Length: 423
Image (cartoon, rainbow, N blue to C red; front, side):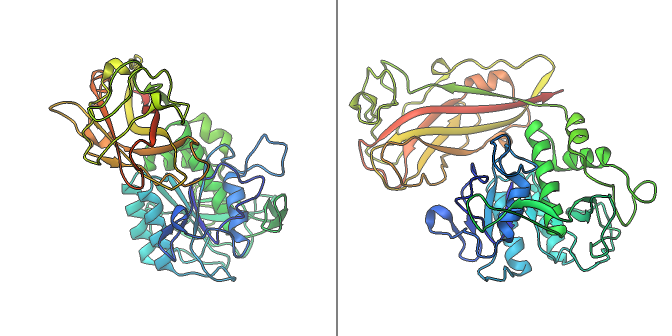
């Protein structure tokens, strides 16, 4: 989930496990200096409602309490103010980065640019969730649009007078005196009211549904929200409560689970030369960064690497009655330099499918030889009909990209993550 807001308290004990942040104002990722610390406090509260960690004997639990979230700072003002251009640019950037749900706790949903952005986000397989506002706005238009608009309810399931509503309102969620994480300290909590705080609850539920079945389309997730909502007000869909109050238990009960398996090599092949450049034979493991026996050395970035083949990977079996819905690449490596760096990875079937070279997100600098994982991309779109045979025939190559010298890279594992769903 991406939480577009004023940033987040980076050291809050209940907001761990986040993804790399992004600052739309400076167009920079956190690893490149983008600032995502909270300059107002609003963002720490919305992030907590979406994804504060649960089952940790600490504070509160967010709706998606075991999901990762990405803080996206959209303001450089202590007031937290921003504009539609920045919000929509940030939403597009989050969708391009692979975030499945984008939560926006700002006003402005009536701007035509928001609907256009919602359509783009859906084209990337994601959902845009936006607050209805706190000025009794009446959102006219077509509810079957590309943005999920969220109003607020109180503890009696009544809509406060200030909540936005209207023909375009989709759902409501609790938004009065809602407890969440705050920016006052690393274990601080407080309550506030507004559609800003109802919105991340809906976004978090969207994230839970996607997590249970990553093969669902954005429309499929929204349909589950609609079917599982508690009808409030006038019977059926109405202009105050939309489809009704979200219900997490009911929504997840309606979500058929998907199975995600991993087709992988635990390390580069033992006792075999893997590249035609310089891989030291005899390696038993790649976990020891200082072991020259576990050294993958490239003298160029041209990708002259002998491919890992099916013989180096565990076999993938497609369970009966299921279909492949998603295929993703990942490489995990260690390297004996503290600088930030990138790796390249390629998956292909000789004479057939070819992902081309995919560059990992930047591995951030830190402790030398710490394991660094880089997801190199979703390759599902390479085929409209993935089969187990295709998975097992894929071959893989890795190459050095930027900021890695010769003799510095140890590949720990390469994974092909395959998600399946019922036929």
